[in-house]
Image (cartoon, rainbow, N blue to C red; front, top):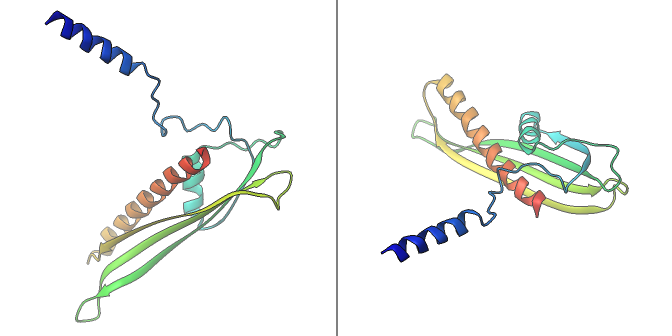
Length: 154
């Protein structure tokens, strides 16, 4: 019985000190230096992604990159009821990320498109509908930002 407890304690201590570190807790990009971040498209998406990425621009670095972020958001009608009133909407957020060599802007290091979509039912109260759309948009942007963090670390 005592041997089992000692064995369990040894296993516990060896697993807790294995050096595991969740990817989203360390958002600093110490190995990734950016001299310039260029954004175009939907300004709300760009501002939110820049703040979630937490990348600081430093023009003095020699081996740095230029990060280009192009974003857009689409809201489309998916379905209507018998009377022709909208019953289902779909919001899609798309972000195109390109990493250039800062010394040679023609040299593309990596590029990728990120997209996230959500469908939802219409609400008669337009204020509640707009609040719901803001929440959905924020969730879409946060999921895309997490994917971009993984992309930049790889």
